[in-house]
Image 1 (tube, one colour):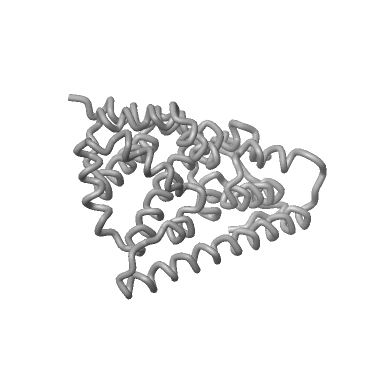
Image 2: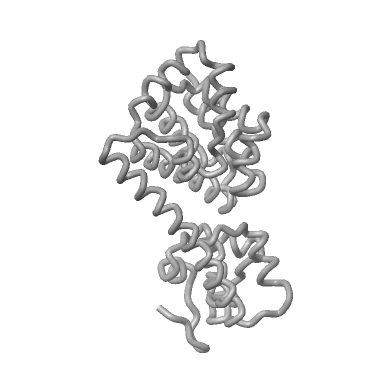
Length: 259
């Protein structure tokens, strides 16, 4: 449904049209990012065409990975018309397409090599994982944990992984991180159901792919993400404050599973 100058849409109609939740729209209203221009006699939020245009910009910028604060500054800063924003968004999408094209090429090479049974080389790991892959990290990890049962279990499992397996593992990890980032962006506290669900998915991902992770061990991993600057930087690159948010969600999830 489209709003006209004489028609205003309810929050439910807007949520359905834009594929967002009512809770998200309420949050945008509370932080002043997208405030509906009117109210019904019963007090329900009503959005006019101007409100929807702003919301369209917000939705596109969120899909491009911008934080809500950055979007607000962009929309409330120097005057820009709709065409200016659309041109900016188009340029950002084209840039993202280039990046995705490179990733697709790397995955294609991995799949092709998998068909021939080749092992994943360090160079190919860098193609898939970018700066997140560093042989020095692996050497340090082996030095610190090489005598543990978890390290031996992880080594046993990963020795059998193909390039296609690693591509899938990377996609799974990115999905979990995206769930954390989305929960934080929506204003969900780290103790919320959605944040704790992401934490449980994180624990199960490691258990399924590398080694069995108890809730006590998961707490320790969460602490490491804040204590080790390299882990922290990885999460902070996704969203400011995300490392602490992930740590707190992991602790909250462990608390709810405590005997």
